[in-house]
Length: 168
Ligand SMILES: [Zn+2]
Image 1 (cartoon, rainbow, N blue to C red):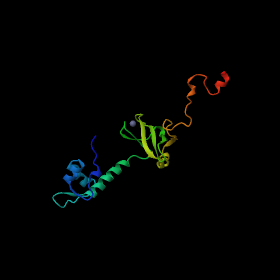
Image 2: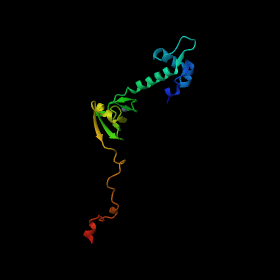
Image 3: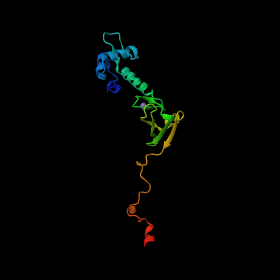
Image 4: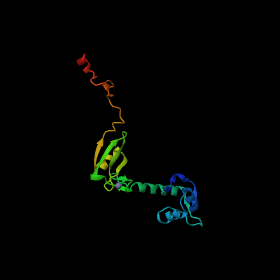
């Protein structure tokens, strides 16, 4: 998988040349130059070396990351089979609590039938429910201790607590 440039590698108060920025982010300097030309990255192009403020670069990378995230609408789930966001089959999804505030939204991909999962906030549920039908499930029973542990005396047939009195 190709590495994605991470804004955390950039120091806010440093001035970077195109070369240095490329090195720091592990991308080609042509890529950095393209960012300054087409993508709105601010650079000082008055000198021989194009200079970019660390804070501008951080901001730029942060925005790119954020805009990538926004592509997935609340009611879409990402399918790793189709490599695209999908509306679950029949506009139906399940929501399973994972904590007080978060849960897992699941559905099926309409194109390839892959199971779709997405971690969502409980507060997002209303927005999602406006678009698709969400069934809220209780937490997975295997994760929650049962209130009554199974009786161990049922190993022998007829050994139920009140069967005793009938036999003897
Ligand atoms: Zn799919």
